[in-house]
Length: 200
Image (cartoon, rainbow, N blue to C red):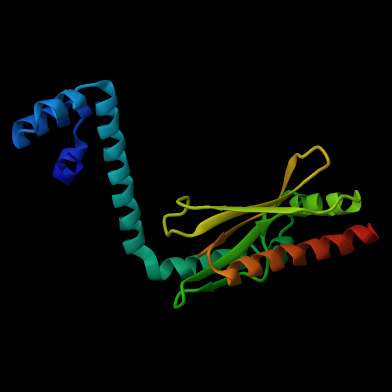
Protein backbone atom coordinates (compact mmCIF):
# COMPACT_ATOMS: atom_id res chain seq x y z
CA UNK A 1 0.00 0.00 0.00
CA UNK A 2 2.76 2.46 0.97
CA UNK A 3 4.56 1.85 -2.31
CA UNK A 4 1.40 2.77 -4.24
CA UNK A 5 0.80 6.12 -2.47
CA UNK A 6 1.77 9.02 -4.70
CA UNK A 7 2.76 12.33 -3.04
CA UNK A 8 -0.49 13.98 -4.16
CA UNK A 9 -2.56 11.36 -2.36
CA UNK A 10 -0.74 11.99 0.93
CA UNK A 11 -2.74 15.20 1.40
CA UNK A 12 -5.99 13.22 1.63
CA UNK A 13 -7.70 12.17 4.86
CA UNK A 14 -7.37 8.48 5.81
CA UNK A 15 -10.93 7.79 4.59
CA UNK A 16 -10.31 9.53 1.27
CA UNK A 17 -7.04 7.63 0.90
CA UNK A 18 -8.80 4.29 1.40
CA UNK A 19 -11.38 5.16 -1.29
CA UNK A 20 -8.61 6.46 -3.58
CA UNK A 21 -6.70 3.18 -3.18
CA UNK A 22 -9.84 1.13 -3.75
CA UNK A 23 -10.79 3.05 -6.90
CA UNK A 24 -7.37 3.32 -8.53
CA UNK A 25 -5.43 0.23 -7.49
CA UNK A 26 -7.99 -2.50 -7.01
CA UNK A 27 -6.44 -3.75 -3.78
CA UNK A 28 -7.43 -7.19 -2.43
CA UNK A 29 -10.61 -7.24 -0.29
CA UNK A 30 -8.77 -8.40 2.85
CA UNK A 31 -6.36 -5.43 2.65
CA UNK A 32 -9.23 -3.03 1.98
CA UNK A 33 -11.15 -4.31 5.01
CA UNK A 34 -8.01 -3.85 7.15
CA UNK A 35 -7.67 -0.27 5.92
CA UNK A 36 -11.32 0.44 6.79
CA UNK A 37 -10.60 -0.20 10.47
CA UNK A 38 -9.58 2.71 12.75
CA UNK A 39 -6.15 1.09 13.23
CA UNK A 40 -5.60 0.90 9.48
CA UNK A 41 -6.69 4.52 9.00
CA UNK A 42 -4.38 5.64 11.82
CA UNK A 43 -1.50 3.72 10.26
CA UNK A 44 -2.03 5.56 6.98
CA UNK A 45 -2.24 8.87 8.82
CA UNK A 46 1.06 8.22 10.63
CA UNK A 47 2.70 7.20 7.36
CA UNK A 48 1.46 10.38 5.70
CA UNK A 49 2.83 12.52 8.55
CA UNK A 50 6.22 10.79 8.45
CA UNK A 51 6.50 11.30 4.70
CA UNK A 52 5.63 14.99 5.07
CA UNK A 53 8.27 15.44 7.80
CA UNK A 54 10.90 13.69 5.66
CA UNK A 55 10.08 16.03 2.78
CA UNK A 56 10.34 19.11 5.03
CA UNK A 57 13.69 17.98 6.46
CA UNK A 58 15.05 17.25 2.98
CA UNK A 59 13.94 20.70 1.84
CA UNK A 60 15.62 22.39 4.80
CA UNK A 61 18.81 20.44 4.19
CA UNK A 62 18.93 21.43 0.55
CA UNK A 63 18.04 25.09 1.08
CA UNK A 64 20.80 26.34 3.30
CA UNK A 65 23.40 23.64 3.80
CA UNK A 66 26.53 25.75 3.08
CA UNK A 67 25.35 28.88 4.90
CA UNK A 68 24.00 27.04 7.95
CA UNK A 69 27.54 26.32 9.16
CA UNK A 70 28.40 30.02 8.93
CA UNK A 71 25.19 30.92 10.75
CA UNK A 72 25.88 28.44 13.57
CA UNK A 73 29.48 29.67 13.81
CA UNK A 74 28.29 33.27 14.09
CA UNK A 75 25.70 32.28 16.71
CA UNK A 76 28.34 30.47 18.77
CA UNK A 77 30.64 33.51 18.64
CA UNK A 78 27.87 35.83 19.80
CA UNK A 79 26.82 33.54 22.67
CA UNK A 80 30.19 32.72 24.20
CA UNK A 81 30.45 33.52 27.90
CA UNK A 82 32.93 36.36 27.37
CA UNK A 83 30.64 38.04 24.82
CA UNK A 84 27.55 37.71 27.01
CA UNK A 85 29.39 39.08 30.06
CA UNK A 86 29.93 42.33 28.15
CA UNK A 87 26.16 42.73 28.30
CA UNK A 88 24.69 43.82 31.59
CA UNK A 89 22.09 41.04 31.76
CA UNK A 90 24.47 38.08 32.35
CA UNK A 91 23.26 36.08 35.35
CA UNK A 92 23.69 32.65 36.95
CA UNK A 93 21.01 31.14 34.70
CA UNK A 94 22.20 32.74 31.45
CA UNK A 95 22.96 29.99 28.92
CA UNK A 96 26.25 30.41 27.06
CA UNK A 97 28.41 28.50 24.59
CA UNK A 98 31.66 27.07 25.96
CA UNK A 99 34.48 28.78 24.08
CA UNK A 100 36.22 25.74 22.52
CA UNK A 101 33.44 24.97 20.03
CA UNK A 102 34.43 23.58 16.63
CA UNK A 103 32.48 24.12 13.40
CA UNK A 104 33.89 23.31 9.95
CA UNK A 105 31.74 23.27 6.81
CA UNK A 106 34.33 21.33 4.77
CA UNK A 107 34.59 18.38 7.14
CA UNK A 108 30.98 18.90 8.37
CA UNK A 109 32.30 18.96 11.93
CA UNK A 110 29.84 20.54 14.40
CA UNK A 111 30.60 20.39 18.12
CA UNK A 112 29.50 22.89 20.74
CA UNK A 113 28.41 22.80 24.38
CA UNK A 114 25.77 24.93 26.12
CA UNK A 115 25.73 25.44 29.87
CA UNK A 116 25.22 28.10 32.53
CA UNK A 117 26.91 29.06 35.79
CA UNK A 118 24.08 27.39 37.72
CA UNK A 119 24.23 24.15 35.73
CA UNK A 120 28.00 23.90 36.09
CA UNK A 121 27.78 24.34 39.86
CA UNK A 122 25.69 21.13 39.96
CA UNK A 123 28.88 19.22 39.17
CA UNK A 124 30.84 21.20 41.76
CA UNK A 125 28.24 20.51 44.51
CA UNK A 126 28.34 16.76 43.88
CA UNK A 127 32.15 16.76 43.96
CA UNK A 128 32.24 18.80 47.17
CA UNK A 129 29.70 16.53 48.88
CA UNK A 130 32.26 13.73 48.86
CA UNK A 131 30.30 11.49 46.52
CA UNK A 132 32.07 9.87 43.60
CA UNK A 133 31.20 11.86 40.49
CA UNK A 134 29.47 9.74 37.86
CA UNK A 135 29.04 11.76 34.71
CA UNK A 136 25.93 10.60 32.82
CA UNK A 137 25.94 11.40 29.10
CA UNK A 138 23.34 10.45 26.51
CA UNK A 139 22.73 11.51 22.93
CA UNK A 140 19.56 11.53 20.89
CA UNK A 141 18.94 11.93 17.18
CA UNK A 142 16.28 13.47 14.90
CA UNK A 143 15.92 16.64 16.95
CA UNK A 144 17.95 18.70 14.47
CA UNK A 145 17.03 18.82 10.77
CA UNK A 146 20.68 18.57 9.72
CA UNK A 147 20.99 15.19 11.44
CA UNK A 148 23.38 16.18 14.25
CA UNK A 149 22.99 14.42 17.57
CA UNK A 150 22.00 16.38 20.68
CA UNK A 151 23.52 15.31 23.98
CA UNK A 152 22.73 15.99 27.60
CA UNK A 153 25.30 15.62 30.36
CA UNK A 154 24.66 15.51 34.09
CA UNK A 155 25.42 13.97 37.48
CA UNK A 156 23.47 12.03 40.10
CA UNK A 157 23.18 12.99 43.76
CA UNK A 158 22.94 10.68 46.77
CA UNK A 159 19.17 10.28 46.21
CA UNK A 160 19.85 9.20 42.60
CA UNK A 161 18.30 12.42 41.29
CA UNK A 162 19.70 13.62 37.97
CA UNK A 163 21.15 17.14 37.77
CA UNK A 164 21.92 18.60 34.34
CA UNK A 165 25.38 20.05 33.77
CA UNK A 166 25.47 20.81 30.04
CA UNK A 167 23.79 20.29 26.67
CA UNK A 168 25.49 20.08 23.33
CA UNK A 169 25.27 19.36 19.62
CA UNK A 170 27.73 17.18 17.73
CA UNK A 171 27.92 15.88 14.19
CA UNK A 172 28.39 12.25 15.25
CA UNK A 173 28.09 10.32 18.48
CA UNK A 174 29.91 7.33 16.96
CA UNK A 175 33.32 8.99 16.55
CA UNK A 176 35.61 9.25 19.58
CA UNK A 177 37.01 12.72 18.77
CA UNK A 178 33.79 14.78 19.14
CA UNK A 179 32.78 12.93 22.30
CA UNK A 180 36.19 13.48 23.88
CA UNK A 181 36.19 17.14 22.84
CA UNK A 182 32.77 17.73 24.40
CA UNK A 183 33.80 16.12 27.67
CA UNK A 184 36.96 18.28 27.69
CA UNK A 185 34.77 21.38 27.32
CA UNK A 186 32.59 20.27 30.25
CA UNK A 187 35.71 19.59 32.35
CA UNK A 188 37.14 23.00 31.45
CA UNK A 189 33.99 24.73 32.69
CA UNK A 190 34.01 22.66 35.87
CA UNK A 191 37.59 23.73 36.63
CA UNK A 192 36.72 27.37 36.02
CA UNK A 193 33.71 27.17 38.36
CA UNK A 194 35.76 25.29 40.95
CA UNK A 195 38.33 28.10 40.95
CA UNK A 196 35.61 30.73 41.25
CA UNK A 197 33.85 28.90 44.11
CA UNK A 198 37.15 28.54 45.99
CA UNK A 199 37.45 32.31 46.23
CA UNK A 200 33.79 33.14 46.81
